[in-house]
Length: 221
Image (cartoon, rainbow, N blue to C red; front, side, top):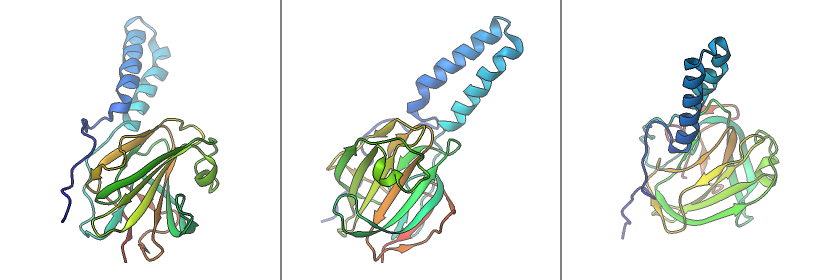
């Protein structure tokens, strides 16, 4: 019997991510106050910071791939690894595709498939540059294992970076997600690794730019 798919958990999905509301409110108030009190050009850095924060916390709606067999990107960014690697939970051979997010990318994380969350696991660690391959094994990270209605499994790993030290994951075992459902957020430059069966066919190559939910990373095979 098929399981009805719903976004989980239930919370607002505004165009500006809720993770940034506090930062934006404070930075706007400080910039306005500095301008109102005659700070002149000295207030310019405050307005630049507000503009940067506004673009960083943007969370636009996205259209997913038309192919129902496609595995969509969980994050915006650049492909920094495509190849064999060990599954972080089982140790079995897997196809790993890594997406590096810089500070100018949208940082909402979206479910790569329609399916049920099997397991989540937080692992403390270091904060080396998330562009480096060793970030996959050394950095602080949060693991989400998922399975679709056909029993096909993948693992998505949110990884903190040199600056990014705020991983947010809003799902737990038993939650059921649409492909593209927003499930987490990472602040200020980071990385998401996707581990797939070795039979999956990669659709991206090293250095490709990808968009969360819109870009198909791979296809079930």
